[in-house]
Length: 219
View 1: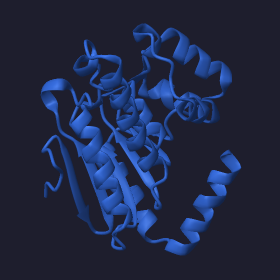
View 2 (view 1 turned 45 degrees about the vertical axis):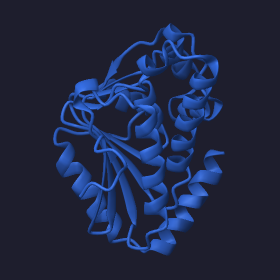
View 3 (view 1 turned 90 degrees about the vertical axis):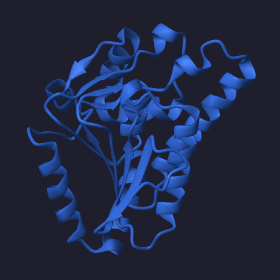
């Protein structure tokens, strides 16, 4: 079921779980301005739907997200580029502040803005072909402070510095070893389904309370 303003971001609710799927294969799911807007709208709609008990963000087979679509603003004036950044940050905030548990199911490339999306989720599961990099320094971009804090929380300051300063790409096994992802699995679909099944067995009020405590502890 596609309910977005664009078919490049698909939204579905099934058995209590909402799924947002990036669907722009020709650009390896690089996120355009309209896609960020669609994501924000979908997140807000899902947050207001009492049937939604969890949220999954996914991409296509072999590519989670190649990052923000910087080509679309490469030659834009400063106002257009600033607007794009604010629209992207609004989508990250809507995901970060989503009121129920969130999961990034990562297959293939997870680069730049794709890492932002994954970091904004509570849990990250990576398939065997997943790979990660944040090449912001090569584009003269200073990353937003919340994402850097989240990265430091997960991997530590030294590893975060190395990851951001070098723009080095790492595989799923290394990402799991340093804490960038929570699970590195051979079968991403099966692991995602298993996680959701276990989650749905929990009491929603208890999960909300535990999740709030986790967020406070992280801060």
